[in-house]
Length: 256
Length: 309
Image (tube, rainbow over all chains, first blue to last red; front, side, top):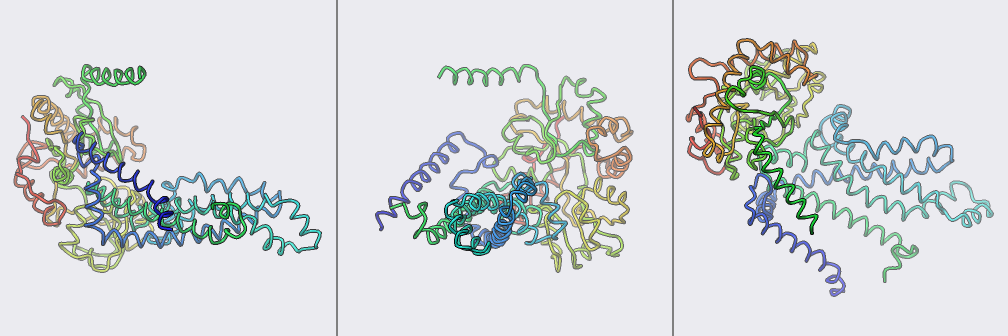
């Protein structure tokens, strides 16, 4: 088990250490001004000396990201089920779902503040808006790719539409939904931080304030904390997907 | 390999050709507006050309001007005095050579209907304060007066929230947002931040320290031309406003005229030539920023600025 963990953790750790060392050397050798690119060692010292405020900001951002993801996954699944209900529904509404994929969140974030007021509600909305499309698209693909033989089997036994949905279509779409959630998790972090730029609170305000005060070390430290949040969410979705799928789906059962 | 060499040659070649045509870039930090009136007027009068300079404007809203000058991507830039002190504390060698606003034009705007008559009363009344996160003067005001029951939120360069919220206070340039608010039929009241004792020079021209040491004559010519531009603009802003207006459609001719009128007393102060700075004020600013914990060390005042002649 320890050996297995080591084999998984070693490669990314080695690339991290080498990458950081190389950046430190290059920035020192080229004598780059900290205003333009801070040294990794300066970023590390900002990340540790300002750990208190950074962790508080991280917690605020994390709450908004989780609420946004909860919103986008429930709305996204409901929307996908509705779109899958009939080819007519899909043709009529799916093109508009794509709006959520291309929406320039930076441009509409100030509007979210006008609609929802300053504070976490606007931030949650921004996180949800940018993360809903991968949930819709992936879940819809899952719902529409149900094995026709199994669908016939359900029909042959006279299963109701609701029973087919719960016992066949949704379970079939689950691996697709989980893939969508992995994409959505990273997007929700970006959405929340952009939302905080205008709505206030969290790492977004730390980044803006540090920029204004020309603390590039603190900017990168805040980005580091945001990446940790993204990694943690990615890992959490991965774990959920292993737990949910390991007994029956090739995507998680096959890795032995 | 050959392609890399060719690319390298191209880059080197271009670096040297840039030197040949002698265009000096000036990076602005906002859209063309009366804040830069003297620059446009100097261009219009041919003042830069008269001093043997070809100046080209670049930059705009959000341009990282201090970084651009630090990296010598542009020789001249517009910043504020507190940015100079912060940047020098972070190891950059930028130096101020001309200060447009002798009095800081930044302020806080709220609704006159609230009948608040001092900055202190404003900051102690419950309501929302919309300011860019991290602004040194906001930190100064908080330390000096305390923020009481204020809900501090980010400002995102739109007066729409101000127009709809009767208890909102926001950051402004006295030359911009209050004029826009009045024209949107609001009745704003503005308090200058300078009243609190925090009064950095604003819209200052910055250069790299190396440029000042190695090419001081050219910096002096630039400043002399700019001063001529400002003198003429203060006497009659009309012609330069007419040049700027098409470049900034958000402001119409009337807004340009009102802004130029509003800023005049902040630029043209009795005693001292236009744009000149004093060591006392730089020392005071650096001390204030140090007490706010924004800079570690106060440098000798003469390192922050020069009055080139």
